[in-house]
Structure formats: structure tokens, C-alpha cells
Length: 148
Image 1 (cartoon, rainbow, N blue to C red):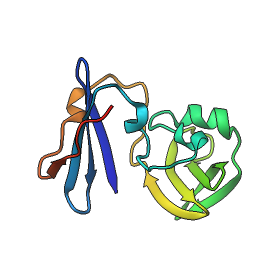
Image 2 (image 1 turned 45 degrees about the vertical axis):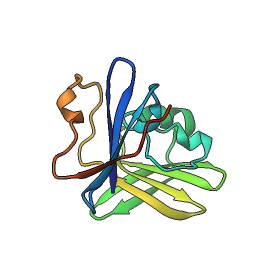
Image 3 (image 1 turned 90 degrees about the vertical axis):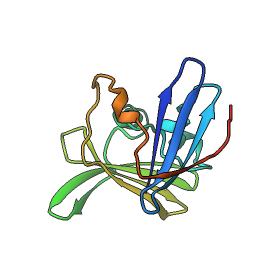
């Protein structure tokens, strides 16, 4: 599982990606702000699916999949499955019925599961807390280089 974070500076964006399996990460600085660091972090995603950002799942579903395509049982819980397909790519967001809150997200390429995320906690509209974007300690970082 890889996590991505970023913190804004006046004229540049600093970001990092971390592999929790290896406790290793990369850091980089971008001269211009980019929303790509708020996405799933997979290269080559179809344009429609690339618009999915963490914290904006409800807007993404409203624009692309306003009704569930099916229902699915996961463990003891039932979920509504919202599926968006764009070419060979697909993303599914699973919500408990009537909550509007994502519990899982799954990304597929050519019908093969590439990434699955479980949301342990999901909340929007929270006040900005810069401490949430501090680089975790105990991780070996390498510089990925500057980019625009």
C-alpha cells in the first residue's frame, strides 16, 4: 500500500509517497501545484477515472455513477457498488446503503484488480490541520527530483 501526502509552500509543492510494506519512500518538489498528488497515484489511468480524488468521491459519483450498479456482501455487511468504466479501466466505490460514505474503493485495468483501498475513517469539511501532512518518521526517503 502506498500513501501520498503533500504540503504547500508559497511557490512550490513538496510531496512524498511511502510504501508501508518496505518503510521506504520518495520525496519530490513541484514548482507548480498539481492535483495529481490527491489521486490514487497510478500512472496511465483513463481520463474519466483520473478525475477521482480522495475526499471528492461523492462529487465523482454524482457526475459519473449516480446510482449503484449492484449490491455486494463483504463479510457481515452489505454495500452498494458504484462502478465507473472508461475504456479498459474501471473504478468501484462501495458504500453502506444510504450513507453516502465510501467504505472501499477498487481500481481495475482490463478487469484485473490493481488497487483496493479500505477507508477506516472518512470525513469531509474538516478544518486544515498541517500536522496531518508531516512526513512519518522511521521511513527511508530518497529524492525523486524536482518536476513541474
